Every structure is written in C-alpha cells, then in structure tokens.
Image (cartoon, rainbow, N blue to C red; front, side):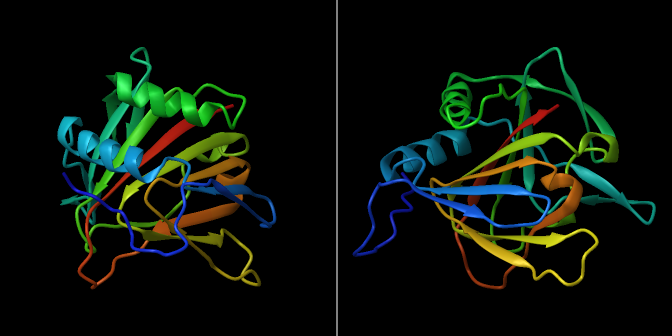
Length: 209
C-alpha cells in the first residue's frame, strides 16, 4: 500500500486552518483535514476503484490528451459540460459520500458533483483557468481535497496586474475551500515540474448558486 507519511519531527494530525486575504475571493486552507492514516487509505482506494478516463480537448483543430486522468461523480440526474463534451455523472460511491459529508460540515451547502483528477507524475498539470461558465462564477463553492504528492496550487487575479501570484502547497490530506466570487476574480493552476515526484489524486467537490 502506498504511504505518503512525510518524515517531519513536528508533524501532527491536528487540523491547521489558514484564511487567505485575497481581494474578491474567499479561500481557506485546512491542513491535515484528513489524518495521515485516513489519507493513505483513501488514496489507495480511490486510485484502485475510480473509473479513470483519458479526456481530450481540441487545440488548433487537433484532439490532444489532457495531461491528467479524470472522472466525474455526483447526483445522477445531472450532466456536466467539460472539455467540449457533455458527460453523464457516475453515481456517488460510499467513500465519496463520506468525504463529501466531512467537507459539508465546514460549509452550509450540499455538493452536487465531484471531478476527480489523477496527476500521475510531474508532467501532469492543469493550466490557468477559472471554473464554470462566466454567468455562473459569482456564487460558487469548490472543496478541493488532495491525497498523495504535495503540488503547488497557484492563484493569480484575472485582471489586476498589481496583485502578486499566490502559491499554496496542497499536501496529503488537505482541504482547500474556494467560495463566493473566487472563480469570477481569480485564475488557478497546477504547474508541471521536472522533479521526480509521486502521483497525486485531487477531488473537487462543486456547488453552483
């Protein structure tokens, strides 16, 4: 079984909460939201039991593989438009429902869908983007859970050049909440790296107002 227990003399399973002061955004990081033991178990189970797919997107008229594997789960009466196609949601698994319910204790909403991403190595990434269509971005919640390798989550303002880029390391067992108009005002990215790193599984639970 893959374990991501990092050797750290000060490592604990105590949840550490950080709220970021970003104009037009509500971003909160919970480190150790899931314990190391829980996170190891969930990583291995999700890796094995998720129906991972290789999606493609059109670039200059050619179909190119996305640099990661993905899977959509959620309320089965819903469909999602993603990378130029409409996708039917797979039904929630018992494991995803447990993770969802844990996150919903921090936000007073019910998530309706979840996009899972499997970053196999440092070459897998996601470029600068804002989630949702333009007319949906003013009231959204995304609960982003990381299991596996730590990757930097970068944020930059969509229009203001005077604001510096923010880098947030998303560690094994962490939860990042993005609420309100965050998607309307800020772009985010997981960059590539040439370092030899282990895989990361990311779950983005979603709600649109």
